[in-house]
View 1 (cartoon, one colour):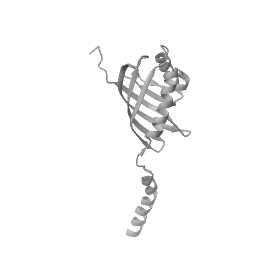
View 2 (view 1 turned 30 degrees about the vertical axis):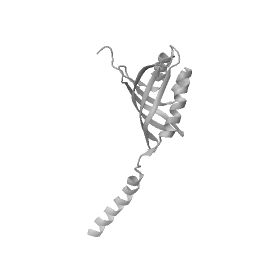
View 3 (view 1 turned 45 degrees about the vertical axis):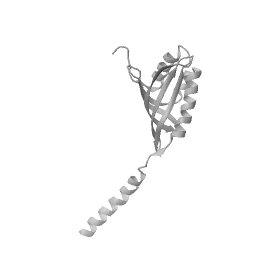
View 4 (view 1 turned 135 degrees about the horizontal axis):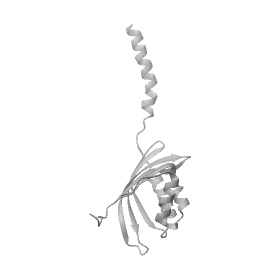
Length: 153
């Protein structure tokens, strides 16, 4: 009886061991994410909505401050289209950290929005969950908040 219990426990352990060892420690993917952010910022500066939206997964979600959640590429296209309609933006990102866990990464960063004459008109912070799709990092969930005090409060 004891032997069959030990064999059963050993069998369960052998089944679980690969799953436990599959859990990964985070890997610094800051350089990879910063490279994607550089291309993303260039697409925004050029006003190319199609290129901008191409940096998002099909099921992506953007959660801007004081606005509804924009989900999926069609809604994200509408959001970026409205934002870039007034003309290209000079948006700057600074990656504070980016940790990868297999095909998922989490980035913490800061952003600035500059006017055409180079003056900061907004700045804040963001968190992005990235997904690696076909070997490319794409934004999957994007939430950002301004650090500029609202005039309505």
